[in-house]
Image (cartoon, rainbow, N blue to C red; front, side, top):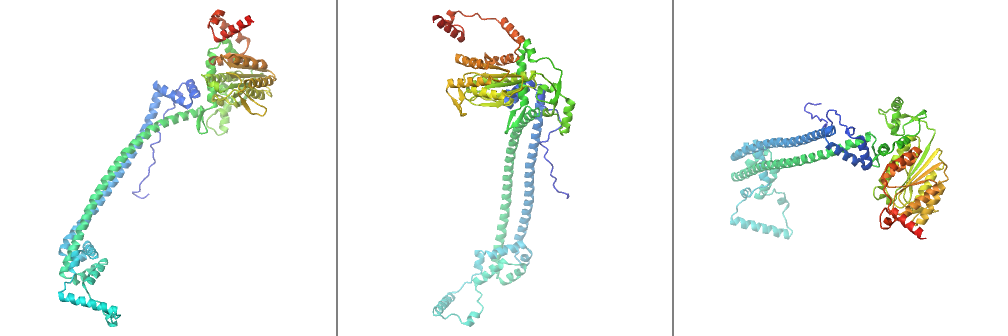
Length: 617
């Protein structure tokens, strides 16, 4: 590299400083994080982080340190920006100093030329290029005084003679008698106009050698007029230089003011970008940590919760439900005694990590070239069960499920049931299906993200369950259907969906229930979210009767408990529940008179009215 060449250094403003521990999620309560992500998505995780930061402690200090590093980076960026503007201003000032020096030198030369023009000698004209340029300009654009010096003043007789000469020449031209050949060959006369024109032409190419001839050919009056014109040209040029000097000073001030304003605006913009970058980097870091832990992933350009996160949330929901259960039910959910037989296989659920084959998993990851042990590369020892289970979980997602918290409670209940099934039967096959007018089979994440739709096509949901279970080889088959109302739509013979005819919809659902009842070893449970409309309960019982299963009437808050009780379903559980109900305080049943007067529940009042009608009949 040549001496003096500029060296371009890399921009290190965005490079992190000393390595520090700045992981945020490790300081958040894991269960609260899982719940926030599952229920509110990435925004829930941000709110949890903000809430925990407000409590102070290590997390607040870690986030403060992270922000401080970002602020120092922003400060360095602003400092570089400021220095760049200051350098531009300094370069402009340095350029102006150089320009001012050149103008001063040129004005000094012009002043010296003006002094020489006072003598206006041949030698001064030859030696001074600025004076020579002034003379050349005076000849190219002669002033009035210079023009007057070349005029010839004629007497009256000379003017009359000249007039008659012009007249005679005109007459000769009219009659075709121009100049003779001899006259045409004669050299034109040297009149005053021709002399000044020649001097003007000489001004274009006037050289120092021609200056001597110029002086010799002019009269003193003409030289004096030429001298005055040259001095005026020099003075005018001097004024132009002074004006240029002032203009350049004004231009420098304007540019400096403009750059100063631009620097201030750029600093403010950089500060604002620094604040926005601080928020973006904090969110980016949170998102990055969530992705590293497998809690969220990019799906179609958007962040979405992962199967692993929903599975953790399902385990959390189950644990919360189990805390409020009788001890006998808890034992029943754990399953039967161990067979003592295990087989090695791929990890299917995070709950199996307790039986991880760590050496074998590390070797498998190393052979794949991975530096990290990922869940899909892990091996576990899975207990071999003598009993297998295939469960189909049907969820009503019709528009009425959007009322209150029914849809959320139903999804949480199914997640708890899913985790309970896998805890007792690790190899169980579980199918989810959501139905409104149509039916869609779902995975765990899609189930949790399901949204209410249109009408209720219960019959088509039972048809899909039949297709899933009819060829299953499981020794135990279970069906759970959660709904909040009547079948409202059906699928006709052409495959079109019809809505609005409740009788046909119920008949279609009953026919599909009869079809499903042909599946061997099927245990079915229809769960109806409690309603004041008796027709809903009658429809649920009609379907249950055909399915040869059981019906459960419950409210959303108790839904998960009811599902887990039906899944555990043994004598110990029934005994524990019966004992708990006996211990619970019983509300005295109102009399018939009280019921007729409006007392008791709506269901008790309806029962009293039916009894009164039967007695009257």
